Image: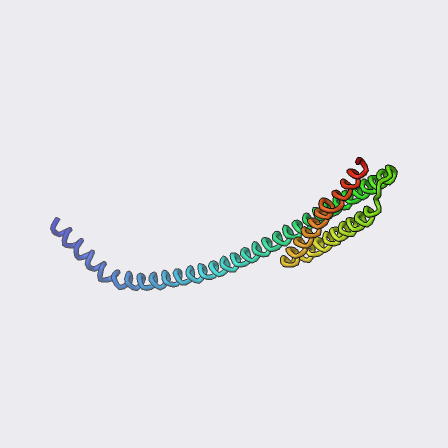
Length: 189
């Protein structure tokens, strides 16, 4: 057994002496091959990473463009909705003024038939219609301002429209209506 052990030890030592340099040479080639493989993978990763970054930038740009397009569409729809609402309001106001004018003319006719002095009413009604025309003009100016989209102009046009409507209402409530009431009260007395 000692002989076998001795020969085994010599065999291992001989193998280590003979195979050692070959294995070391193979390890060197393996290390070089491994380094080359690692380098290739790094280059591939960097290339893929570059492509990914490029695709990501393209996606970001595409999404940004889509958002801007949607915002523009939404803004356009808002403007259209505001303009449509203004047109409806202007039409309702024109209808209201027309009905009011008919009623006032009917009142003047009935008061004339009753023998009341209505000489001042036609001038008041004409002034009221002028104020109604001013309101209609302010509506169209406001529509144009909304169509152009300038915020300062829109605010100025809105304020001008509000003032014209208030002036129309105040003139009717403060001048025309009290004049008609005083004529009716004089007629009753």
